[in-house]
Length: 184
Image 1 (cartoon, rainbow, N blue to C red):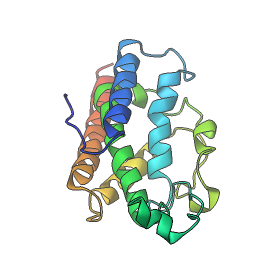
Image 2 (cartoon, one colour):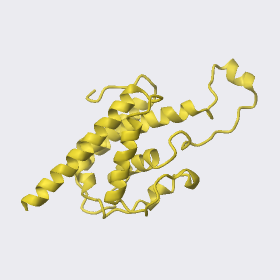
Image 3 (cartoon, rainbow, N blue to C red):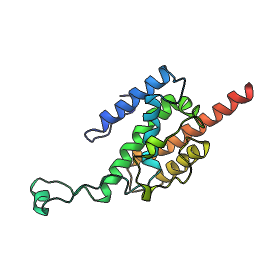
Image 4 (tube, rainbow, N blue to C red):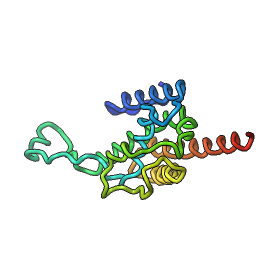
């Protein structure tokens, strides 16, 4: 596998589907902002980077009894470690989108409305204070959040490395776009 795997069930499938969508987006660049693949590519950073990082997942109902958890060797799903797992997963899933189709995604800065993606966020945990458009300010905010993630020791080393890699990819995309525009 090109990007390596995580040792946890489900992450391989999520990452593979992200890579598939990114390849599709790269092979068939959308003419307008209504592309399903573009929406998927933007939904992941909106959900993962624009919310209070340790509380953005759904809070499950408490178990009927603590003994039920012990009997089945289950973990209480309401603890912060599960939110850390979600952030580990989401950051890793962003890599193929920005690595494979990042320049295509960047072309839609100022042209894509993210209102539907924002519907999944909890308003009281929202860190993004701008409007619902995919703006350069939002792109820069994502880079700041990824830089912050790369410095969080609670996260897996691979997640921190992926976050730093994403920051570098995003800077590279901006530089390539500037060079391309200045050559015109």
